[in-house]
Image (cartoon, rainbow, N blue to C red; front, side):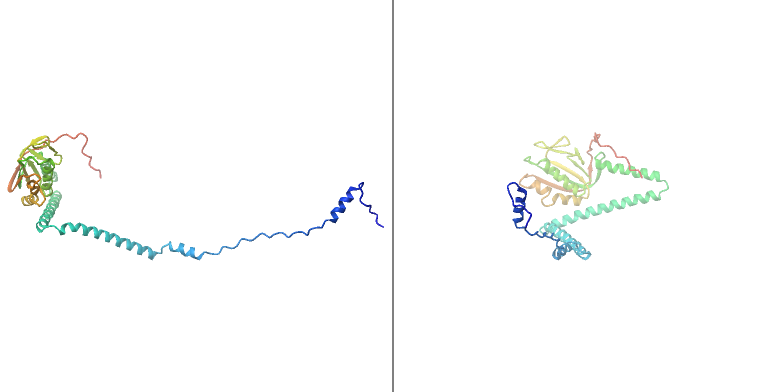
Length: 284
């Protein structure tokens, strides 16, 4: 016989135990294993792409050569385009351009020879101080001519421009001066009154032109010292001074005379500089 007592209201603990014993017991569930990380497989396509962006030494040399070829091609195209302007020029124009270039070359060669002669003279002279003084005085005379503070004489041209209708402007006269300078003019004066230098200004003052504050009227007589042939060619160059003055826009006349001797006696009054001062000589 069993000693256990039946569940009664007086014995609740035994009733609870009996209910729990009657419930089915679930078996323990197995734990889900943690997945291991998958090993990364090498991306061959990506590696090849990265390797393609790292040029080898041979590829770098080829790139440099191609860049040089491209630069040469661009320069050649620009040179060809620049030459196109001379292909349509007339023979007379080309001859005048060639004469101007030849004149500039001879002038530069003369300056080089003169400088070399001065250098040799200073090196071989017994009295170097006296030689240097003489050369300095000659340089002062040359600079005085260029600055317009000393008169000058030599071969050149006299250009007479008549403007009966008063249509010439300061820009026309300035263009004429620039053409003469480009042709090698070393000293220029207008109407025997005004010396043309680097600081000369031209202002319209109808009927006439003010040059450095002085009124100048037609006819305008330009006297320039230099190679007379080159100066005359520059004035008569097609599209240049003579063509401009005698054209329909002005309707004037122009006369160019080559002279063995031209006297430029007008002087430029030098002004004291307000701001510019001579720079000190560099120390060795």
